[in-house]
Image 1 (cartoon, rainbow, N blue to C red):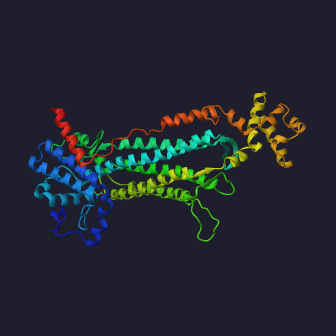
Image 2 (image 1 turned 135 degrees about the vertical axis):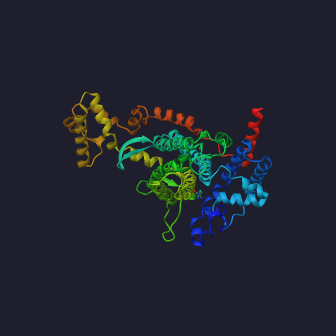
Image 3 (image 1 turned 135 degrees about the horizontal axis):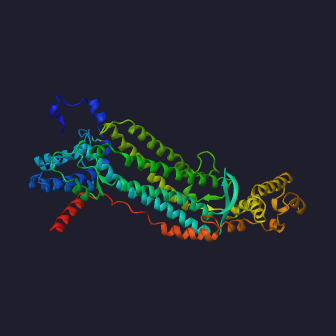
Length: 486
Ligand code: ARG
């Protein structure tokens, strides 16, 4: 006979190679605290429903509490023989409290159990990731506030060609907005994930009189899953987390790319503090933005994890399939990639020394003010397309003659753009161009000041479902509910 927990019908245990191949314990040890808490909630429910004799039930709860305390001190003795975290917990509990442990799994399957563990884990990760994102946003905001106070201007780019002058604070806040949307997506997916699959059992629900709403309440879920098959088959919350992580990674990568570009000799818009740069083993002069490159590079991994997991899900028949075990790998790898990327980005943002003079020089190229001249012509009644052509001709003349647009002679200006007030050319300045962009979301100092104030107010993260409870907290909630019902 097989000595597996499920071995009754088997003449032998699985082949060693296949057994090792199928084990998930090395991956799912991370689920241990959530598995213990989920089990405590399940057993508390079995007790309340009279499904477990109360003495055995209480012993199981004490055993789970002891295991969770032990796990907080150091790693539990999980071994080669354990197939996955769920069976490992059952084994440890049996070793600790004996026969009573054999009653724990009534009305439950590893299918709803692993789904509950993963949902609780995603709740914990949502908090850690939200904190990391908010720290990056706070760093961006502090740099933006300082850049605003110093009045730093730089060229804004399209197609990586100089386009129009903008405030550095405005540019930094653009990255801030992208990360704020990421926080929103995270809060949204965490809310959607916060339903309890317990009670679905293997796939069809249980014939025992379970109370899934009660387990959900003990674990801090908003509700129970509406369909038992979906409860065990659904990994959308992981697909959403991975997609969130991939997009956040791409936002960090785009930010990193600018850190890399700006610190080149060609741009020279910024320099990294020595403590944030790396050198070459060969070339003594090198100062490389390698941590920025790692942020940019690692974002590819996040996209891969998302795409890989989507491929795993595709075509899986309802309800549970072992393919779903792959989700653990994707989730852990994504978290282990994203959290350090956030921590590194926060540091790197604080390590950039902006080259204010150099940025102002680049922004002061009069060609960047061509649009302002076209707008002047529009104000003088010239149709925009005509204005665009006329100013384009002036730009062409200036470029051919190799002179700044602002020093074209009055005759040339009058010949190409007769409606352009001549003094406008001498009045051109990047500061004036920036100040004129007063529309909502624009780069005028007035607007950017408001945007900075609004960002301060919006810096607090959106609300999340609570962090997952420990076994002790599940038991506290249980007592509180008993007291409240008296
Ligand atoms: N180790 C499994 C997983 O991670 C747990 C569920 C297993 N269920 C089963 N019937 N083998 O998905």
